[in-house]
Length: 429
Image (cartoon, rainbow, N blue to C red):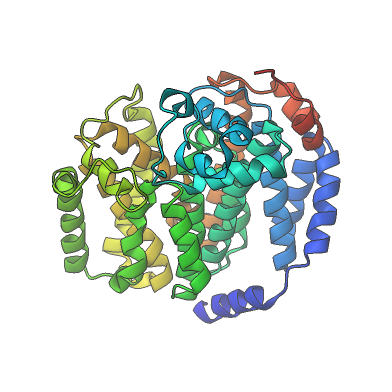
């Protein structure tokens, strides 16, 4: 079975993506109402037996475009207001100031500042994005959302190629993540973190598949870190080789314990070396040092979310890494190691509630990476993944108008084509 999986992965890797075909189908998708186009593309992929790389990429692009178009209708609110103002400030701030004032309102509060932000890539995204989208913010919001979804889909795709019969985990994993309303809810609200984690998940998926970090993977990982410092958590998995393999039980206990201790002591250790500088190199350390007093959050961990999201993921990761570790490939173990240590990080951050909830939100993107390991029997696994995907779709549309942010009406996101959602300009700010 493992040989079949490897040969399937190699075949997928070698097949070229026909980008013209992807663009052509995507153009049609943009013009069709979602209640027609979404069922067609999902049913087409689910029933395929020999899916090409081009067909997978087309599927990823269409699903990503749909959610990008919905996000284009969102009225800026909450944290997103800062990002919106930073984008709109681009003509007046210029390139260098865009790297300094990645939070837009700061431009007016402290106009003399010259220190480039530690997450300066957001300024580059704003600057380039402003001119690429002609200053039309809904289009920029759509591009960001598309990038977030598409990068995670690519990472998931590469990782699933290391599994037995990866087709349903790929197709249903895309549905599970994209229609998970909590993930969608935060994509623009805290866009820096979600864009950065999308970049890092793309890197992690590649590393799981290739078993090594290629040059472009390192470049992408660096981009993730300078987009949001929280992704530094994943860097040890890229540089510490033993984490890319099955660990012994003793090794798992040792690394898990060391990780928890390091996370608990992290703010104290960082405060000893942190400076007041906001430079790119010291920004992450400064944020860590201040994490125990940066508790300005209205949303601590929610027990219902812990029960529905974290608890099943913890059970699956523990069972596979502790009780059934000999059944795992190194690639599978690598991602499960990350998920387990991410869960331990969340537990260890009990004195850092803001950071704790931010890392908890990172679990959302790992859900489709985890669920395929819930059952060992392939047929039962695929049935479970299909059921989860259906529940996510139904729950998304049920919850949509209960989301605290303002979007286009529910009927519009079902009936109106993505191109209409994108250019109807649902709000005036």
